[in-house]
Length: 192
Length: 192
DNA sequence: AAATGGCATTGATAAATATCAATGCCATTT
DNA sequence: AAATGGCATTGATATTTATCAATGCCATTT
Image (cartoon, rainbow over all chains, first blue to last red; front, side, top):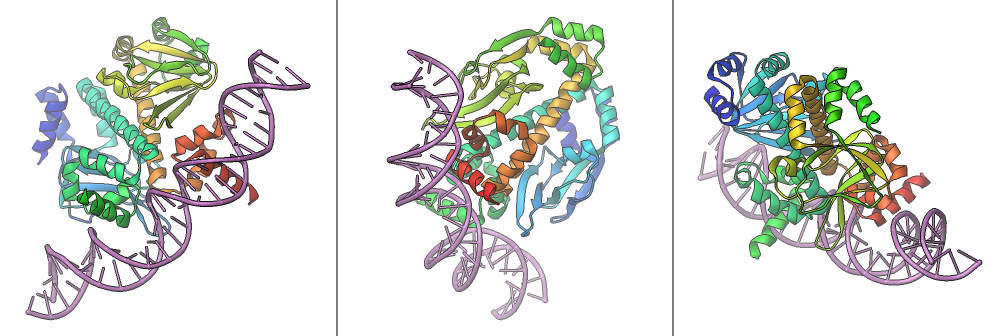
């Protein structure tokens, strides 16, 4: 499934075929079963990771054992904990697979090497980072300005495919509401 | 006050003094009075902007005329709308000054030129972007996992200086709660 | 086919937060 | 000094959302 990653790089960057080979050479493919961890709270995250198949989530657990889901990543998107990777500090997040999945891993030092040696790769990476930031900022905006129902409707618009793929309780968590509230919202909006 | 910007670059990057001169050469210093706009909803944002003095905020207005504050930026931090800058689309945000302020502006094309010609500058910029993303992600985490009171206490920890500088109603908006609720929270926590 | 486990749904109730309205407090202007 | 405007505070009430508990529905396992 490394082809998925190659295709992505070809589409998103101007990396030459030789450089692409150089990139692939340092990739490690990891298969993770459903419910298997990619990262556990307290461990240090050491990779850049790209999902080629399946779906993973990033979340925390609070004192009461409630899950708080920060992110979903499906095929053709990145996952990991940038903060732990950058700082070398233990992560506060857990990452696990919601389906049997496949992930491409590149170690921090290899990744830095690629960025330094392949300008087109570096540009792509920074473009992704920029996009990630914009997405995060827009999500912040939904939290400060929308009601539970509005957040859900916006989620439906933006990620229609995720709705079928991810349990509702997890979507509720992602939106910062309880599963019961989401269930009622769905029930009500269905009637309209 | 361009010295503030120079000092920042010297501290945050390995840019040489000659390159620093090259950077400063394309900087435009803009002074903005309290309540003056730097950007209005519907306009396209065309700069990278660094605050050398004062304080600005980024916010939206909803149908009911309520403000929703996305961000504050004080001396030594950046402001602007990355999304509008990248896409060339009109911004959905407003940015205005909360105090008489001073901002250093660099146009998009000059900024790209600097990034292309000065690797150390490019690295600094990407480091800032990375940090911005991490901050945004952590803020998302507060929205999905904390109560109003907890969010406020965390805000106090992280930005103690802002509390004295910014009207409480704006902090409430930044936290996604009403001014009344914040007032009551302060009243209660003061008693403890 | 029966049993199991994980969700989603639904109802009753509680808690958190928003809304509306009134008042008070300052700093700034006149 | 008086008047003004912008906030913050406070109280009463409404609305939203969470919590707790019970039930039901499927898909998977036995």
